[in-house]
Amino acid sequence: MTGGFQSRSIAAVILAGCVAMAALAAAQQSAAGQQKMEQRITQEVRHQLVMLPQLSIFDNLAYKVDGGTVTLLGQVRTAVLKGDAENAVKGVEGVEHVDNQIQILPVGPNDDRIRRDVARAIFNDSRLFQYAIQSVPPIHIIVNRGHVSLEGVVANQGDKDAAGLRANGVPGVFSVQNNLQVEKSQER
Image 1 (cartoon, rainbow, N blue to C red):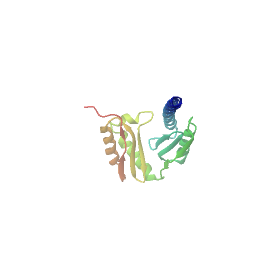
Image 2 (image 1 turned 90 degrees about the vertical axis):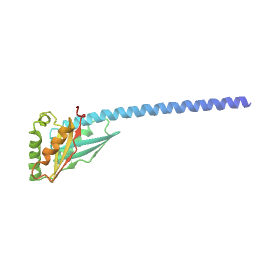
Image 3 (image 1 turned 60 degrees about the horizontal axis):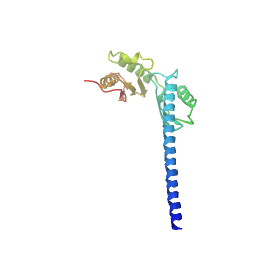
Image 4 (image 1 turned 120 degrees about the vertical axis):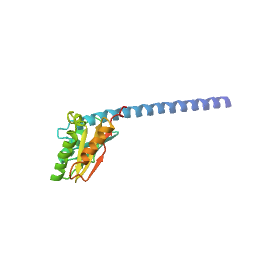
């Protein structure tokens, strides 16, 4: 009698182990599927945002993807662009919710002048001109009440430093926050 009970106990332990392993495998598959979905959503959201016709070098759009939720971040000059960004992202397959935290920059003639002057200073520099002629210029100039933020990506640290120096040299600029990311390390 004890032999039958013992073999049933062993069979129950083995069965429980198999069920646990199957559940673990299913969870891993689900996590991999979730990650693949987030990667697809991330790529599509980026595409939708860079295709917005009103987006310029004076706007900065960023985002985070968490499952089916997309959080929009950054700064734009108009409420229309903020709304268009949200509407474009809502249309992406798999997006269930959009949290629009995009800041609308204050309107002012001095900030407009600073935007133009910083753009001229940066893109007229022979070292940085290459960034001006790209279809989607990777350097974005954000001006908020005289404070300048440089956002985007440049090829090397020298270009990042040059852009920061050029922006700092513009009259009327109170401060410059150089948030440019370096694409790759400079080769020596």
